[in-house]
Amino acid sequence: MTAQLIDGKLIAQQVRDEVAATVAKRTAAGKMKPTLATVLVGDRPDSAAYVASKGKACQELGMGSISEHLPASATQEEVEALVKRLNADKTVSGILVQLPMPSNINEERVLSLINIEKDVDGFSPLNIGRLAQKGREPLFVPCTPYGCIYLLEKSGVKIEGANAVVLGRSNIVGMPAALLLIGKNATVTVCHSRTKDLPGTVRQADIIIAAIGKIEMVRGDWIKPGAAIIDVGINAVPDATKKSGQRLVGDVNFAEAKEVAGFITPVPGGVGPMTIAMLMKNTLRAAEIQDP
Ligand code: NDP
Image 1 (cartoon, rainbow, N blue to C red):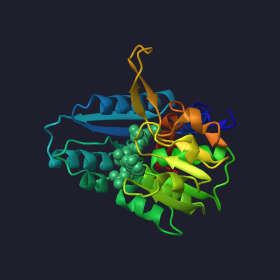
Image 2 (image 1 turned 60 degrees about the vertical axis):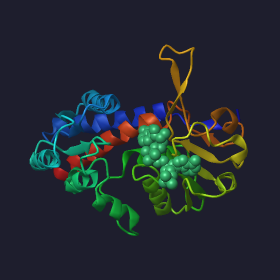
Image 3 (image 1 turned 135 degrees about the vertical axis):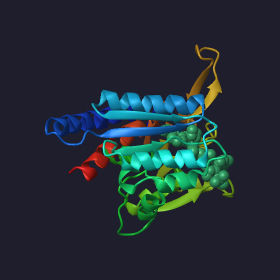
């Protein structure tokens, strides 16, 4: 293996330790306890599991958590009323609406209602707008792309001046990741399903952020020697040797890529643990904004 492994689990633990230490200091000083309210609508088991793990992380770091659950039959008005109530609740520092919501709910309208000071997921149009504008700072950066950039910086990868290729343009990963890289003075190409020469474009990249949700699509011969690879993809493939009958792989063919790249994140254990760690960091920041 030539690439240096970027250990997301370790770096996420360091972020969590720093957050826990600051939370303990704040609590001792009688300041607002960082408290995350999660909103789950419907019964998707994966969403329920994500929300539960976020609540557990809050507890482990000495933070408060409130979990709100509405049935799949909830109306737009009921979801909006809940968000408004949480906006007004002075004990709540951050609000996270778990996506996707049932198809009858207009997600954009719900997200745009979240008070910008409590928007710890960073998805409100105001935060994304600020991220996209030169000289403006969002109050919160979306957690997964925030984790990607944090991993690059912690690993000593130079972003300024680098050619970065982002695979995927979703609102939650690809697009904010591209905006963050531009803000850090990389030259950024964003690829998507209509991109013509994906391998040729990726071959130009000093930094690759892969977020397409396609099993090991990025091959070793797409990679410029020494490039830094952040693999956001989480894809399940059948594996009879595992108790669950499956294992997780990324969007990058790890076995091939690690022989060419300079840095690479594993799946699992790369970006995954960073997402919750950055959510905790954002929730602390929300409390610091509301009660400095
Ligand atoms: P989306 O499905 O919302 O977006 C996928 C993007 O990839 C789209 O922009 C799409 O293009 C593009 N794409 C799809 N197929 C191709 C292709 N063949 N060639 C080039 N581009 C393609 O996914 P998300 O952004 O939500 O998630 C991406 C991956 O990251 C998933 O595996 C997901 O599980 C994982 N993920 C991991 C997280 C973590 O914490 N580690 C958090 C969030 C996501 P187009 O826009 O043209 O349709």
